[in-house]
Length: 246
Image (cartoon, rainbow, N blue to C red; front, side, top):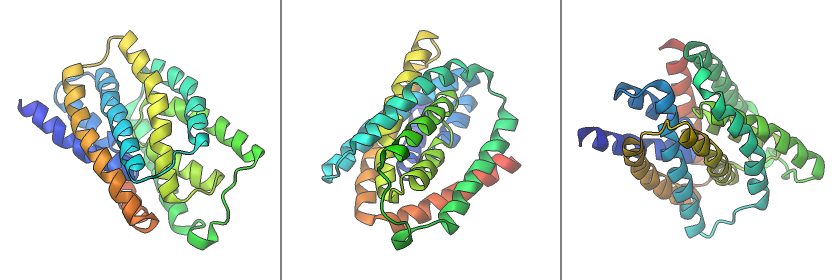
């Protein structure tokens, strides 16, 4: 019961982090391993919380009257086959090198958010055919990464959507949960086939992630881009320091 309660609380925190920014798996994966799960089982079990977090975050956005853009669905479908391959390769991850690479990626995202175009300098959204095709190719690769490890995927998605499509941070967050929901179905399918999911622990974490995702999605609509930007930068810096030095 203590393990289940711990995972509910950890899932709640991860649901908040994942909905606003990304990197909740950097919290949930170590906890699952600490509770005795092998790394590949922890990686697979973690996806149950990700799935429920995405579903309830979308419900939260829709309850505020936010429209789900069709292009987000296409990006999720592009990520789907990449996630299949990434999930198959998940058992081969080398932790220490991966963590340092991820730390570098996060720092680059923070630098872009600090010094890249924002607000009125962002310009109009890019929705031409060339931009959309580039986005589909990029999200196939992002899907592979998401299927492989998931941790930090939110930062890659946010960087891609703001750089390629010039989305606002709020619209990026909405698109992110749709994309993650779609490709996570591919990952869960692979992990069910490989019999790697601990359902008891996964559902306990998913309960917390659902609450965190639903409440935070509604809050983020009210607060808008400014507070989301601050939250993303602070959590990104904290995760990068943890990955690189610990």
